[in-house]
Length: 455
Image 1 (spheres, rainbow, N blue to C red):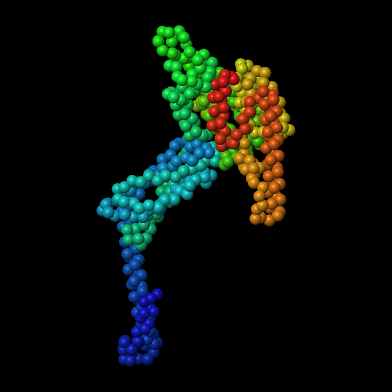
Image 2 (spheres, rainbow, N blue to C red):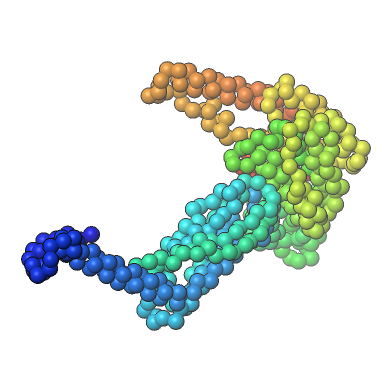
C-alpha cells in the first residue's frame, strides 16, 4: 500500500491534460498519480510472488527421508525410547543449510514428551531424534506418520507435507524391568555377588571355596582342608526345585488407577518379575489369575522357557468389575496342587471387615502351604494422611475438607494395618508396599525367604 501513498504526492500537472477535451476521460486521468501507485504495487507484488515461487521451487531440492525405530514390544508403565532417523539428501553445496520442523503423531492414548523437533539440516546428513512414551495400558497401538516443514533457501516460504510412517507396536507388561532383573540375577550368580548370595545361607551344597575372614567356622570342610593344605569351606545356596505359586487378583479392587497404571498392571509386572526370579533360581513356578473364579491356571514348571509360556497366557488379561472369590480360588488351588509350596497372593486389602473373606482364605492355606499376602499400596493416600497440620492460606471450608480427607486417610491406614496384623497372627507372610515399588521389594523378599530356608 505504500506505492499509492507515495505517488499521491505527485502534482497532477506533470501530465499535460489541457489538450484533452473536457469529459469523463479527462476527469479520470486527473487521478493518474494514484493509478501509477497501484500499477507499481501490482508489479511489486508480482515480483515478490515470482521470487516466492522460485524459492519454493528451490526447496524441492531437499529430500527428507524418515524412519522410526523402537522396540516392537513396549513396556507398560515405563519410559520407552522412540528414535526418528532423519536422512537428508540434496544436490546442493555442503555449506547450504535449511531449517526443518518435525512433529510425530503419537497415538492419543499414549502419554509422551512433546514429539516436536526443530533443527538445521545440511546436505547428505543424517540425524537421530529421540523422545520417550509412557503407555498407560497394554494392547496394540499404531503410529500414523509425521508432519514435516522445510524452510526455503531464501526463507520466503515453507514447504509442508505429511510423511506417512506407519508403525505398529504391542504394549506388553514391564519387559524393560524384566531385562534389568535378568541382568541382576545373572550378576548375582558370579563373582563377588555370588559369594554374597552364598553368605546369606541355604541348605543345598554349592561348592568348596577358600576360607575368608568372617566365614562360619562350622562350614569348614576338614577333609578337603587336609587334602589341599589350606582351609576350605562349604558354600551353601538355597534349595532348588521348590514350588512357587503366584495368584493374581483381577477383581474390582484391582481396577483402580495407582501412580498412572491400574493396580492390576502393577500386580502383573510384579508377578512376572517374581516368576522370572523363581525360574532363574531353579524353582517350579505356577501362575493363577482369578476374580469370581479361577480365570487362568498355569501349572508349576521349571525352565527359562516357561516364562514365555506364562507371558503368552497373561498378556491379554484385564481386570473386571467383579468381586473376587478368594475362598473358591484357594479351594481350586488345593485341588490342583498338593505338594507344599510358597503361595503368593497379589491383591488389595482395605480393612479387616471388607477383607474378611481374604483373611479366611489365607488361613486355609496355612496347614499345607506357606501363604504370602502382597498388597499394593497407594502413595496418594499416604501423602494425604501424613501431610503436616499447619495453617494454610485457604478458605475455612477448604481447610475443613482437607482435615476430613486426612482423617479418612489415617483411618484407612489404621484399618489396613489391623488386617495385616491379623494375617501375621495366622502365620501368613505379609508385604505391604507402594504399587510402583512392589516388583523390586517382592523379589528381594522372595530371595530372602529362600536364603533362610522358609520354603
